[in-house]
Amino acid sequence: MIYILGSIGAGKTSLTRLLSEDLGTPAYYEDVEGNGMIANMLKKFYDAGADSRKTTGTILQIAFLTFRYQQLKKAIMQENAVMDSSLESDFVMASQLHKNGEIDDVDFNIYVTLSQEMQSNVNGSPWNGMPDLAIYLQIDPDHEIEEIQGRGREMEDIRDKPELIAYYNRVNQAYREWAKGYTRSSIITIDRDQYDFVNDKAQRNAVLDQIEGKLVELGKLAPKRFEAIRAARA
Image (cartoon, rainbow, N blue to C red):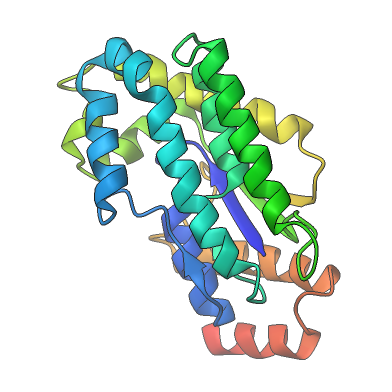
């Protein structure tokens, strides 16, 4: 199991697609546009800034949690499944909303209990509850906002809602703090300011080599298979 984590606009979906295609393994996406439950809740979450985040933050995170749990139950049965969302990333987002007062203590305790129950339900054979590898996409806050604007989602547009800049920066910082303290599995940090794996083939190959080389080191990818994948990319 491979988790890809990072703040909004860091490139999680793109890397999930590229890595899963390279490995020939299943990919699981957050799919905020195709999933009606998530899309509708996100629109409410963004509609009125901080006020809407306070009123919808808890139910949005529970919606995400439910969707990610459904994906996880499938992914644990597949080798090297790649997930651009996870219970881990969901907890980072919920925690920063709680820290900022947009989820209150009572609601957060309910969320944590539910999250822990879901995690315990999938722990054990064939999965120990931890990813084999976590990939953290670190991105400069200004670069992140450029990426968010570039994908053209109206509800995320800072031209209409300039107050979102502070929210995006806060999420970015939450992931930086998470990465510093993460010890549950092996982790690789990819500097998105250095590597444009979407548009630059050489940089994409460098990122894929780094990730897949780590999978070989962890015993999750056979060396000969890695050589074949690299040769196919070349």
